[in-house]
Length: 193
Image (cartoon, one colour):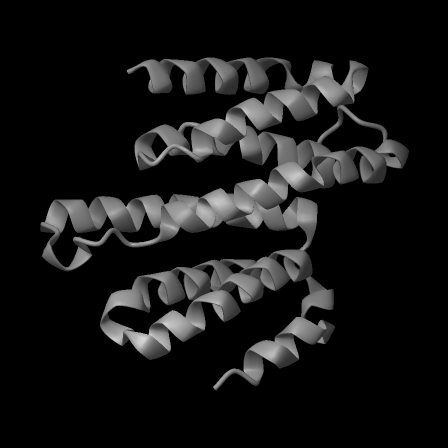
């Protein structure tokens, strides 16, 4: 309950005051985002999901249709948030991984997992707005390369860590960024055995 309360507090403060903080003190917004990020690192999906609207709002302000920042400042402020969004992407990848007991889940648990992953997929798309699909897929490809040897050694035990990379990559590809198809990482993905 304490974790839920703290995450809700940081998230609601962020949602309410984000435009004002970004306009006045962008460095404070980075600290606020880092606090909300800690909620995403929490292992309970329901707690992490409370933060998704904050990330949507922040992504819109930085790289979408938000109005808190003048267009000329967006690239600079967006760069400040890069490390936070990269950490967020890693936290999302961890959250998206099927639990070890996924084969024995009841139907309602499986439905909830599916619903959560759809919501998480939308949040991954928000990360792509800020970092770019290419940067996100490069991160995902790196994680995939690290995990492939474990799959070769034990296909039954390591499939979840591979599947989550594929799930995340699918979300990143669907963000419709035109430069994605020309990225070197796409050729590397296609060359995987």
